[in-house]
Length: 414
Image 1 (spheres, rainbow, N blue to C red):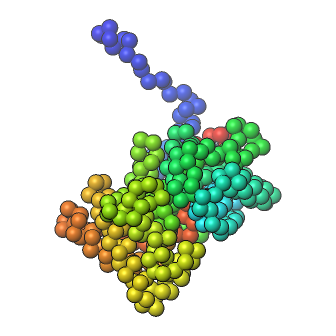
Image 2: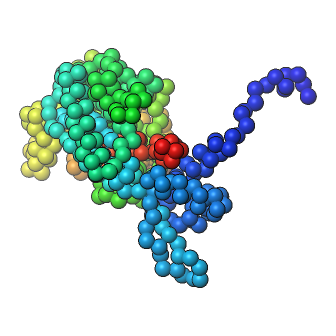
Image 3: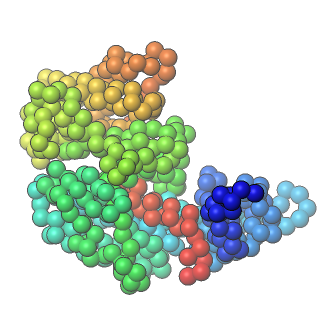
């Protein structure tokens, strides 16, 4: 053996506890990814673990209220009836929080995917005071947490969604142009971050479009979040509101980029000589396809709802129709750049876009056909996102619960 080989660092030997943690997560994921009730034998087959090992780990997950048992099935042959396993309902829950330009929101989801509580307050939050707004959101969150805890549920943590550049490594908001916020540490202002105190709540922060993107492939029984065969594991999600955000989901995981800033499609330039954006540049996509731009182009007031714009379109008003064609062309141009760069074939449009898609689709698809180099050989699909009702709240709560499923040991030992 060469001397260099003897000095080379070696991976640590697997400890029994490490192996148990791995297997516990393996069993939990098997139950959650089954797509329906599954038996212990099904879990053993999916994981490659022995039935005895699976039975031991299942009992621990049942005790931690991460999974639950359904009534036994009628036996198809001689022997003990199979007992179906499912994600537990109304036990361990995750909390999604969001500040957006026109609302504050909190949503609580359980491990089965159901919304068990929520509170959304419409408001105009352009150029607002972050300490006031985040303090207010923190109070709403505490009230919601108290409500679900009274019903016997345990809140595993929270994720705060913000419409701007979030450094995921430091939990710092660098800039949110439409809120007028910059260089901000948002979590202390909520008054929820734990620092390890069991009486408070652990909170992380992420970009709202990325969390909304994750909600699209989530699985759960409620109507907003049911499994959908037409949502692939890899797609581009675009969230349209006053600002326009996006996220690339690869194998149901977000591609964050170096700092977590990937996906700022709203500030892709579609016309260098175009109008000035709140970010300081000119000709950004938001100035053509953002909510304020659409309302303004249709001759509506800034505070009007998407439903007002839709009514103008359905009435055939020329200004509204012209504005949507212009927006669709700009959006299609930006999406074509995205597709050429990252080679993705499914685009899901969320936020304000799903009801407007009948008016956006033709110009969007025309731009994709003319600008995407691979368009003649690879079909591109542009569809409405299946979860479009405050999707970032769902995605934030699910991120918390994903941590429970992938790292269940502390719940078992707690």
